[in-house]
Image (cartoon, rainbow, N blue to C red):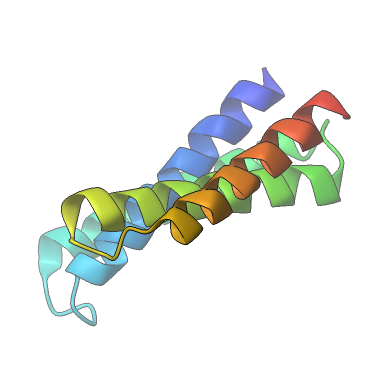
Length: 104
């Protein structure tokens, strides 16, 4: 169960990062509220998962999922640059996350 919660918490990290950008310095109410809720749920999920997953593994997986999701969202929805090198780096992050799970 802790791994499922950790994955959801990592996905929520992507949500709060995207909402933070959309909040434009906390000047827009709806994205700011979404940021706050997603941040609280993401941190709460991470805290719950780390009750049974080691700190280093849990935090690295959480950050990796959030970074991967945020980068993909930027490329797919916001027009961030897409290149073979960037995709390769994202695949390496994914490989690291999967590796940490498998070696746990």
